[in-house]
Structure formats: structure tokens, C-alpha cells
Amino acid sequence: MTPFDREDTPIHDIINQIFDALERADREGQSSVRGRGRDLDRPFGTEYEFAVDWGLDAVGPPTENGPASEEVDDYLIDSWQEDDRMQIVADLPGVDDSDLTVQFTEDHRFLEITTGEEEIKRIPLPWSAEIETTRFNNGVLDVRLAEIRATEGGNE
Image (cartoon, rainbow, N blue to C red; front, side, top):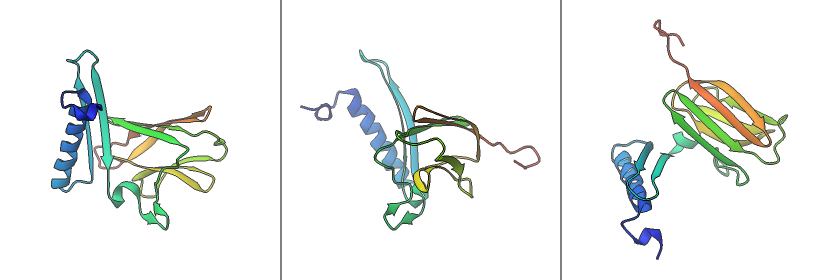
């Protein structure tokens, strides 16, 4: 018996909430969904957060070999946002810092992580952003972004 066979487990509740959010977003014509939850009533409390983006806008234009932002198997990349801040952490074993580039796409809709000519990841941005800090240490990249807020005159 797996945890998915039992309907009274925290993982079952979490998966149902994620599926419900996906179905609701699909019905409403959205191409992304984010959520979080907490269940502290059980012996081992559970907190979770999820984000799902789909469609060509989520990954960039397709290339001959598939989506432009297809993850490279050797790299683990995680990103999350809270209010007007976003953090990206990437485990990039074997990457030399002199080959690493972190930059916005021309339209500022994505943050690109590249090494040499290879695109490692294209991360969709929820808003116009600026890079607050970028650190690369022992093969781990840590990028922190802040939302660029428009001034009262309408200029960024």
C-alpha cells in the first residue's frame, strides 16, 4: 500500500488541492497556478508551496529539440517568490564561474542562466525585476531579485 492508496494522508490532501487548483486555472483559461498550504493538526506538520506554469509563454518559444527552457538533467534549479522578492538557487556542478551568465531577456519577461553558449534555464518573471545579489560559490548559484515598482510619474 502506498500513501496514494489511502485518502486520510497529508500527501493525498496536498495532491488533491494541487489538482483542484490546476483544474480551476484550466477552466479559467490561465497558464499558471501557485499555491501554498499548511496542515499542522497531524503529528508531523506539513507546509507546502507549489507553482506550475504551462504553455509556450511559460517556457519560451520551442526549438528544434523541444522547449527552449528544458532543464539540463545535471542541474537542480529551484525558484520561489514572496511578495516583491524572488530567489533562484541553482546547483551547477562542474560549471566554471567565468563561463556563467545570469541576465534578463530583452523583453525582461525571463531571467536566463547560461554557461558558455548553453542555456541552462529560462525562468519566467512575474513582474519587471532587478537583480539585488548574485553569488556563485562551490557550484551553487544564488540570485535574488526585487520587483521594480513604477514611480508616481509612471516611470520605472
